[in-house]
Length: 430
Ligand code: BGC
Figure 1 (tube, rainbow, N blue to C red):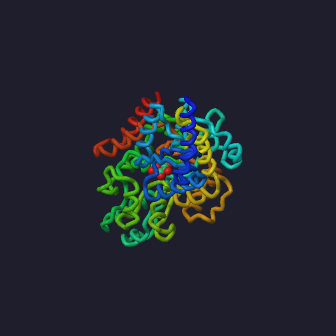
Figure 2 (cartoon, rainbow, N blue to C red; figure 1 turned 30 degrees about the horizontal axis):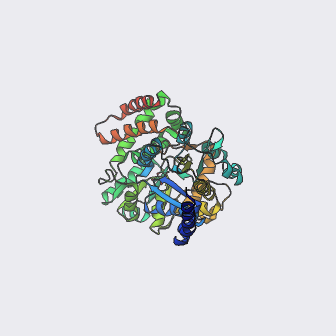
Figure 3 (cartoon, rainbow, N blue to C red; figure 1 turned 90 degrees about the vertical axis):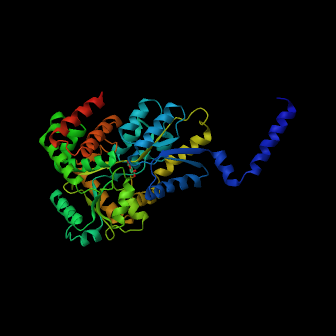
């Protein structure tokens, strides 16, 4: 380069920052973090907005890559395409055993420096910490613990339908649903999407087969349990519950179904506690405007999923010191008390770090934290199959298919569904 050009370039470089607004300057100089997630409902967007704000407060840019679709199947498809084409995001919502899968592919980057500086080993329960490490290195940060086996109720609707007592057994659930239907309400708000179908199926497995039965079927993939009489009972109960589901629910998003319970059109919804984020966003109060109960018959069992952000190796172009600090900052603030309180209060989950004051949470979250501790002691903590905690995506997808096909074929035989489940799991495991 001739001296004159270098000079011109230098002077341009020194003038350029002055021409930019101050915020953009800070962000550009400090780097950006791109996050792939599927938090797009009103309550979810509000929750993730807290993380965005905290990252931006440190002067970094947040690139939001939200992919609509509850349960995350659409987001996972996009993530795979991005990873294969060599342009992964900095972080993506990846859970449970999938973190190991991405680790094995060599696509994740360690964040041990952040974990060490912020004492994650003592901050996190060991089971959670273990899930976040690949070959001993932290490659993901957990955000929360969501309970799945919940039933959400609108007490005013139940009262109008003459339901005197919130259901605590399957028989009581059917009786309440009958009354709701007779009174002209939608008994069960439910969106007919595979992951929502399997949420109901999983709740029934816990209720009918217990924690041990669940483990034998969905962790050990034991043939007898998968094809036995109890599994037939589960599919028979699923068919019965189908008769109470929203007739307009085909393909419907979970949050639009939650809105029907909130607006008093429906009485109940079987959904993980992100459902609470919609009630909170609508300004409703736990315990008065709505009730949360463990899914009937599954009291004492706690099925859970842990939202976590896995950190991806950046492409050569994006692998700058600024972008790396932006990612480290994201990981750091995610486990700080400030974020854990506000995020989980909005999201409906409970904090993932130890020692936070639960009196600052509503009664559903307090019940959730107490039930989690009890289930941990009793050995009835269940990593959710429907929410990526106990199976690979391939096996999970195979189960989704069997359950949704069963629901879409009204003549399907409940006593044959277990065999289909077994074959599908076997095929997907190889
Ligand atoms: C996630 C939740 C999310 C829900 C609905 C689940 O897989 O764990 O964070 O709110 O899907 O989109």
